[in-house]
Structures are given as C-alpha cells and as structure tokens.
Image (tube, rainbow, N blue to C red; front, top):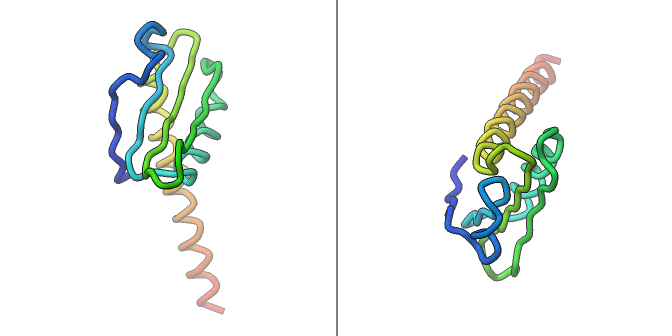
Amino acid sequence: MCTTLNSFQLPGDEDSGPTCRTYVFQNESHTLGNALKCIINRYEDVDFCGYTVPHPAEAKMHFRIQSRETPALEILKRGLKDLEKVCDHTMELFEKEVKDFCKT
C-alpha cells in the first residue's frame, strides 16, 4: 500500500495509553478508511474502531483504534496486512474470472 502514516499523537491521545490511538493517514480517504474499519472492527480485542475525513479539501484521514489490551499500533498493522490479503484474493479471483470469460 502506498500511504503515508504520521504517528504523531492527536489531542486526547497523550493520556489514553498505547491501546487508544488516532493515526493520521495523508492522501487517503473513505476508500481505505471504510475497508480498514470493517476488518479491524471484527477483531475480538477491539472496543472501537472508526475514522473521519475532517474536511473534503484536506487529503487526510483520521483513524481511531481503542482496544482492551493489545496496543493500537499492533492492531493497525494486523488490519493493514489482513486488508492486503483480502485485496490480493479479490484480484486473483477477478483475474481468474476474466480469463475464464475470455475463453468463451
């Protein structure tokens, strides 16, 4: 994935510990935010996961993760890896179906 992640803390994060963090993705929007949120929200150790695009004129997305015990950064990394697997699987299926269609 070609995204830039700034891992600086936003206001409110400094007192919440490593299990509650908001990450800012530059040059990203609802496309990544919604897909990643859907994957991470299924993890048992996640209490909350959501994202916002603060303003349409700004090319950034705020992504919030709150968990019980697992550090938010570990959850984010796992989510990105799982999303990459889903995308790879989708591309493989698509290419197979296009190949099969072209044979007919």
